[in-house]
Length: 225
Ligand code: CDP
Image (cartoon, rainbow, N blue to C red; front, side):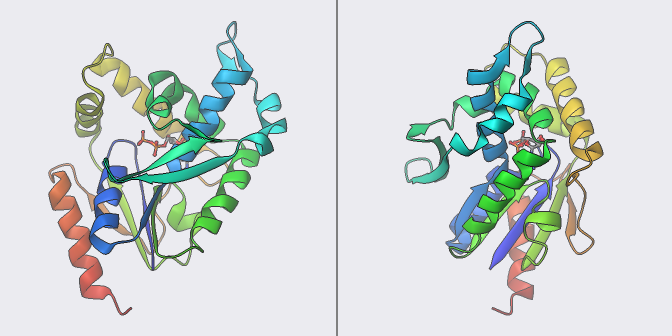
């Protein structure tokens, strides 16, 4: 069974997917964590402080050296991401990574490199993967596909609560969400869009548990496996 969950930033995709993985006893892969880890590597190694951008040419040349893996942490019930042997689960969530990730995720070389790994992870057993292009590109034949969206205001509130306490203002968070939405929707390679056969869920007025229950209910009613 492969469950694809796509959608906009801060709709709760990853935390919903984590709970669904527990419920169905399957593996959760946060594909966004992989794009964030590549971005973190770029910031650490190929960041130009003057232009405040990552040198994408150098990053692309060195992509093969960035070895990513996930390891399950039973204390947090999270499949945490590593670059080599270093756990970077926390550092990939910092604001500087959020500010740079969508530009890195536009690069076809980066997408090819990660999509291949995501497809391999799907071969190891039952998987729930969340991201932007899982139902459209990574697993077009997924057993179940969901696309989650919510109002901008709700998404800003959720992100604010998620990263609090923070020095960032709601305005800065909104700016980052807008900028990433724009990049993700408008990019040429695998833009963020709902797969034709995905179930659309607007969870602006649903909490996390209600979103989870809705998806479980749908899967249990339609599961022929
Ligand atoms: O958690 P949040 O909603 O902030 O986003 P994320 O899932 O961590 O993804 C971070 C960024 O990675 C997105 O804004 C996209 O630019 C990119 N991404 C992507 O292009 N394709 C995916 N399958 C997953 C993430």
